[in-house]
Structure formats: C-alpha cells, structure tokens
Length: 311
Image (cartoon, rainbow, N blue to C red; front, side, top):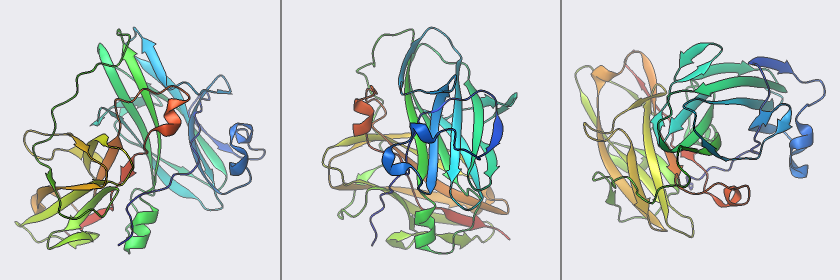
C-alpha cells in the first residue's frame, strides 16, 4: 500500500496588489525562488508586500482585520483549475476577495500564469489564530484511480500565526477528540477515507442508493520521528461539515508510528448530484513560526477524494 504522504512543490510567501491574472512573459517571481526551483515545472504559493517577498509568518496585531495579497503560480505547461480555502484552527473561514464575501474561491490558470489575490479576513477576536491558506488543484476533477487521487491530493499551503491583543501563543490546548481510537496497524502518514467494508482501502467513489446510510472510516497516522498534534477537517463539496453533533473539528495527538480510526456514517440525503468528500490533516497548529522554525514544521495533508453521486 502506498504511503499516504504528499511531497509539496516549492512554497513561496508572496504579496502583490490587486486581484488579477498575469500572463508570464518574464517570470516576475523567479528571483525569489530557490535555485533548484528555477526553470522547473511546478506550482508556487506565497505572499508579497509591495513587490517584495514576505518571509514573516507570525504577526502581532490589535486589528480585527487581516489583509494579505496571495499569489499562486502555475509554472507548468498545462492549464488548470484551483480552489483557495482558508482555515483558522481548523474552522473554515469566510474571507473577502474582489469585494465578495466567500468561503472558497475558484480560479483558472493557463500555463505559466499567476493569480494575484487580495484576501481579507475579518472579525478576528482577541487571542491566538492559527491560519492556513490552502490551495487545491483540480477540485472538481473525477478521479479514476488511486494513483490519480494521490497525485491530486497534494496541497499548496501557507500557515500564519496571528496574535490579536496578546504577546505569546497560549499554553492551553483544545480537548482531545473522543472519537479516535488506535488501530492495530501502522500504515499511513496523513489521512485516508477507507472503504466501508475494506479497512485501509481507499474509498474512491460510490453511487448512492436513496434513503440509505453508508458507514466508512477515517484513518489518520503519523510516520514522522516525533509526536504530532493536529486538526482534522471534513469537507463535503469543499464546505466544512461536522464529524458528529459535538465535534465540527477534530483535535488530537499522535505518537510516532501510530494510526487512529474514526468511524463515520453518511446519509445519502446529504448528497445532491455529484460531490466530493475529503479530509484535511493540519499538523502542529500551535507551533511558533519564525523564519527559521517554519522549515521544520510538518506539512498539511489531504486524503483521497471520495466521489459520491446520486445520478
């Protein structure tokens, strides 16, 4: 069974004014890339400030509004569609872009183009905010194989720490989930949506019968050399749904080389047409993010996409 650990394309931190599409004649961001990334195909995500790359990842503020200009680059020879999502401690956020208030932003890029997005988060309350900017590739593509779903499960992310009217990250942590129980097997890093009747076999698609409930499992594991705390987020058609009536977001801790399982069920009445079910694995949400420390934090992961249809 392949290890469910994604390897991420080069991550930049960029900000450019406006929300527009750039046709790349001379790559305006190439100067900010690592030498190994130049002249290579891939994707870039980042933040800029007045045309200069911004490496800062931690912010102390007394304002309830946080604005950043986000740039995503398609440095490949193929066009593609992409989706921007933002999370605060695993909670999907509404954000403002192009004067509109949205909780997801779909955009399309031709080969060698950049999307420049001025993104505003509003309503920040006093306290610590662990923010993930997440971009998903081809969010509405129907996957035909495990290999394909693994290829498109790669995420492009930037995490920021925002301290609103406080000086340091609190020591208190959320309550650990009551839903997860340890698996006898130790097979994955990240997360997997498992078939209802075949544990550790990816649930790729299902045509749903009317008035039927389907049971399935979420598996999440840690293959790193150190323990990890994490949030799990469940998305249906790229909008957050709860794990049960008490837990919208899962917070848990995993020792190294440990898998856990969460039993779940899905009522076919929840699905209209064709929709995808995915789980996000957001590790180390309380870690400090200095320019030096950010390189040592674990990367977010996404499960296989389960395509559910009633047609």
